[in-house]
Image (cartoon, rainbow, N blue to C red):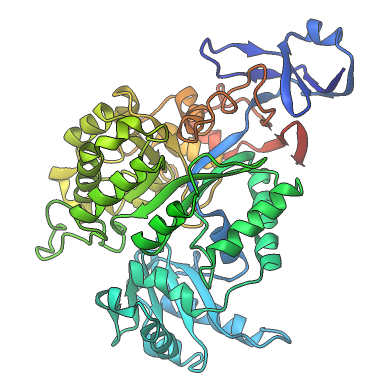
Length: 533
């Protein structure tokens, strides 16, 4: 007896043969039948669901985002649509005036992007002081690698024990923070309770399900005020034990300092330790900043800025030591690198680690991998280094990249097709809340290489377009390899988890420009319908 039977659909299994079925049966949360409508008609089941010819795919997977921080930002002051510093200040002032019965002890705002402003500039410390000078106020740039705080925030930050480590990234005159200083700032804010964290998690899962997402690889442990990673882990595990998670979570474990990451591993935490839907994934590290903030680490200076090659977070010796440490302790790594200099340093560290060949969790990866070149791509292919890519950054960056690096260095950037052609294991993500985790938009960007407005006509660097099948696999089949779950997830096959998504239209027949407008009709997690439009 099946629990559920989905029939009369166009079911793309994405298995090795590319089989297309009409019906799928589910028993105890797993796929127990795949076949035709005629075969399905002979099967006894508790519930039958007519797909009415719609497309069913494996549930979508986002291979890199910040789910908990997304939920936190959604409850904070969002600045993503602001077109001026004045808009940002007005949004913050509105929240301050509507704080309710519980007085605010800090104000967090995120999402401004000066390149979208009528007069491109950062907010300033004195402007935030004019809003409130008795509580910390921070406005984080869209990328998360730059921010501005008020005088109260600067005083709190300067008082933390590890301030000497980040002092170079703090401008006391303007209130500007960069890189690690932004990350460390969270420690000056009051930490939410475990109950509040669980509410954030459940809210995030609900929104992900609405987007057809059934699994994520998410960087969460340092994403909330207070940086209380143990409380965050307890919240995930408690919800998992109670069966309340509707998204599979593979945790990318980020810590502010390498010593804290090592202590986490020495305490016994390892890649692959799992409950029902919450699993410890790789050690996450940051090696450079962002292109927008001009802190991504480049081999040559930024165009027109001879003194700036961006920032590296760790020395080569520190990277070498950490990669070797992780390999010796059976820990996977995922390292944020946008610039070519950062990537070259990470590749070198992976090459030097002799312990990698004995590490069963040695599928190390580079998160973002944007400013690549043919040499870097060859090395990634040879060393089997994963690429966690974000097609949505085509929309975010296409008007910025050439201004930052010049036309001569454009060969091999945002090179999704080149990666797959070389055999680099690549998987798609969104980096939310930097941008939306809307998978259909991501697929549109992947296939068309156009921005959200449909420009340029033929696509940006059109040689790097993917066809729709490869684009879909970036968000289904390929991420399973990164989380060591290729035998459990990513395709619709007998015995695998019944994580499924039903779309209102067939992506494989849709006009490429229309893909972004296709709606998610249903999301199924472990055989349970968790969202219906």
